[in-house]
Amino acid sequence: MKRHGNLFETVFSAENLYQAYLEARKGKRLKPACHQFDIAAGAMLVRLRDSIRQGTYSVRPYYRFFVHEPKRREIRAPWFGDIVVQHAIYRVIKPIFEKVFISTSFACRAGKGTHAASDYTQAALQQSDPDSYTMKMDIRKFFYRINRVVLRRLIERKIKDKRLVDVMMLFAETDEPVGIPIGNLLSQTYALIYLDALDHYVKRQLRVKRYCRYVDDFILFGLTREQCEACQIKIERFLAKHLRLELSKWSIQKVKRGVNFVGYRTWRTARFIRKYSLHKFRRFVARGKRDGIISLLGHAKHTCSLRWMLCYLRQQWDTAFVRNPAIITTAWRAA
Image 1 (tube, rainbow, N blue to C red):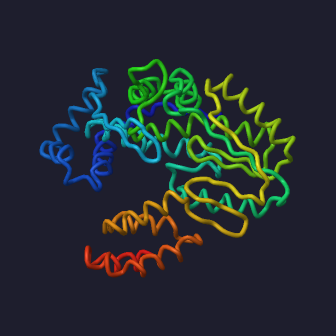
Image 2 (spheres, rainbow, N blue to C red):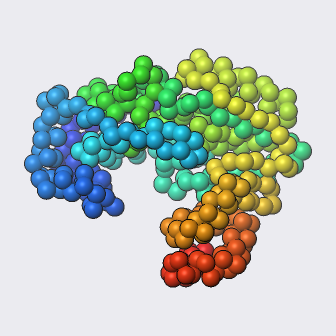
Image 3 (cartoon, one colour):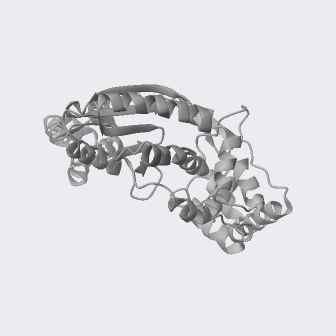
């Protein structure tokens, strides 16, 4: 495997840091943290570059908060200057690792969002025998259980520049002995790198033809029940031995029963959004939340749920229109 060296100067050059700053501020220029950095952006970028080169750079304390959908998670928001450094690293390492990721590894990649994952899922179901089986798996508390020693070893398989890896690992540090922060730009890339080994194991060693993964959820398609049970045992052993992870849950069912994956209930011939998303949609309409309505309509695009949602909007026309005159027109255009 080819390893890349002499990247430190490229990543932390004045030009790359400036481009990273421009990317980091997109959509955030009105936020106080970004505005405060903008006031002395030139001096701040020079200070960041000098501290990194001198080995005195450290990540500032995170702003911590919790989100509760779909489940409770602690999010750690970094200081804006640390976001700039992460963008500088990401700009250089992204193309290096993109070359080794399999095509059906979704999430946090251009053109590889939930819609693409759902499209592949339905195509895989259609290409599989209706009486064959799917096996869906989920890793227990994935981000909280990533082993940083293993992560560094996986990064060093592609990057041999020790100074760069040292800086990269600063964004993986937490107060706990294992785990990485949720909220960092690089955490998404680290998740892809960490489970890339699993992807190649399933495809190359287990020889599973149809397989996809979205972060820590993954599905194997078109197997016999005996093959599913054998793969489950082997995958569980691989995760424990090589990645120090364990499965949270797994399920085996026939292809013709469909799967629940990346926010969609998918069958060979139809696709729906989850019932909880429909419940949120009704709640947003009742409260006149335009952004939420448009977001869920976009989520439901190319599914059988969209027609019902538009009919529901028509039924609620008076209430929604009175509370927010632009909501119906905007929702119609989005759909």
